[in-house]
Each structure stands twice: as C-alpha cells, then as structure tokens.
Length: 156
Image 1 (cartoon, rainbow, N blue to C red):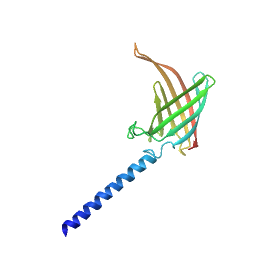
Image 2 (cartoon, rainbow, N blue to C red):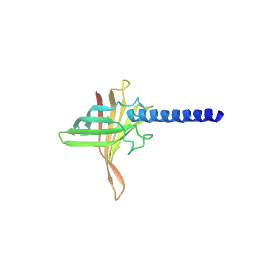
Image 3 (cartoon, rainbow, N blue to C red):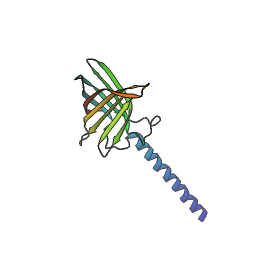
Image 4 (cartoon, rainbow, N blue to C red):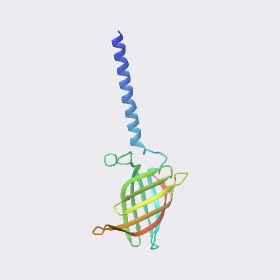
C-alpha cells in the first residue's frame, strides 16, 4: 500500500513539474522577458542626421526569434524601415533592454541605435544613432554619420 501511495505522489509531482514548465515556456513565447520594456508592435520613427536630413518611417518591435537569438541576452527583435529625400535604409536585428536605464539598443553591421523608453511606455526619446565604416586594411573605424531620433507607439 505504501508503494502505491509513493508512486502516486511521484506521479503527481512529475505532472506538476511538467505543467509548471509548460506554463513558463508558453508565457515566454507570448511576452518579452521584461514586460516593462518597449511594447511589441509598430512605432512611428522620426529623426534627423548630422547633415540635417530628416528620416521618417516605422520601427517594429517584434517577438524575439528564440531559434536564432538567445532570450537571456536579447529582449525582442527590432525592424527599422526609414526613408528620406535622399533614399532609404533599414535594420533588422535583435534588441537589448537595460531596465535600469530604460534603454533599448539595436544595430546591425555598421549602424547602432539607442533610445530611452518614457515612463508611460509609449515613447522612445533621447534616441541616437551612429553609422560607421571600417577600413579593413588599417582596421580604423570612422564615423560616417550620426543622428537623433524618437518614436511613438502606434499599436500592434
């Protein structure tokens, strides 16, 4: 009789552990690791570079592709699509989130973007971007352009 009771208790514990891990993994798929970071969805981007050129477009904060990127290192995916009278550019890269400074950062190749999330979570402010180019012979990195930007959350 004691064996049956012990077996039932072990079975119940095993099921409870499976339910717990399923719940945690399901929640991780629905929301970024730190839900106080930028909301997932579309953001209206506006910026100006150091030459005075105005850039407008969309920043999409998307669910992180955990098959490609480490969820312990990155917050979400950031897809930036902007244009000006001089042309267009974009970035598709994972974002990092620094909760202490309320700062989101992303970049790919020679471009990096950072901004601070407002207390209401609906605006990215104090944004800066830098574009560099590297001379692979000398290994010297030169700043090609810089800019300031902000973005407002428009929804999913």
